[in-house]
Image (cartoon, rainbow, N blue to C red; front, side, top):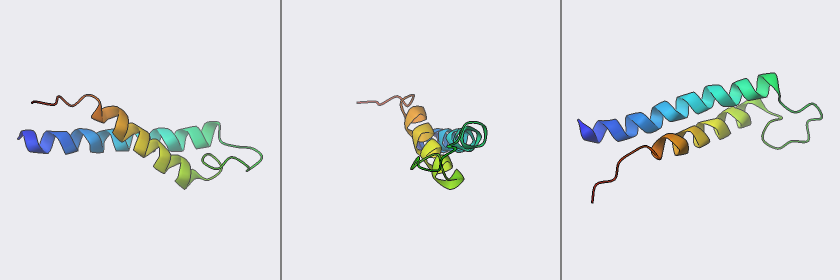
Length: 64
């Protein structure tokens, strides 16, 4: 069961970040279009997914 918990936590973080990135693009975004990440909803969502996965991976206990 523990071997499924780690990837599940990272995937949940990715989904939360995906939604957060899209929400950021929708509400704030980039008006001029010169912003490399927030000018496109796909880029903003993927960036949010990566950041969410990295953030949630910090909460995994590493056993030595």
